[in-house]
Length: 152
Figure 1 (cartoon, one colour):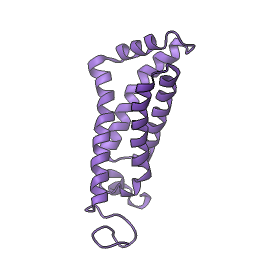
Figure 2 (cartoon, helix red, strand yellow):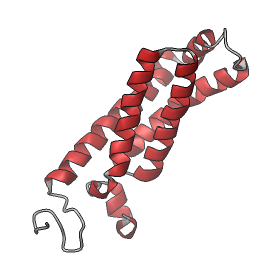
Figure 3 (cartoon, one colour):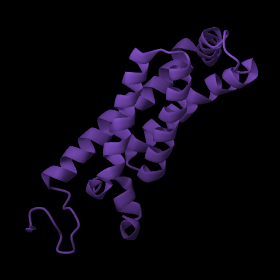
Figure 4 (cartoon, helix red, strand yellow):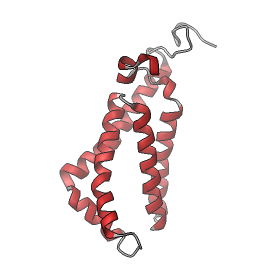
């Protein structure tokens, strides 16, 4: 069932609809959360400190130290970039895919360490990525819709 308050006549969600507003607020809030996880790790704690913490956690494992260190230096940049793109609503689909795959890789390491409480938290992040990707048709209050109207 459609009406002029929710669609523009072609099945598109109107920017004033509850779905569009809810999506924008959720995308924005989640983007701020993800972005500032990275920003804090880069600027406040420092990449070397974050990476050193990961290396200490994975010391008893078979994971090569250079791989853990490299991953630790990349994660905050990926988080910052994904979060910033979500805040802006720019390249939303690729940002959500990259963010979801980041959660997969983090969960792999977390499960290997048997940190099941953290794995549940990571699963909630994965669910948020899923919800945003699955309901992306509501992403009308975004730079994606403004810059690439035919692709959305």
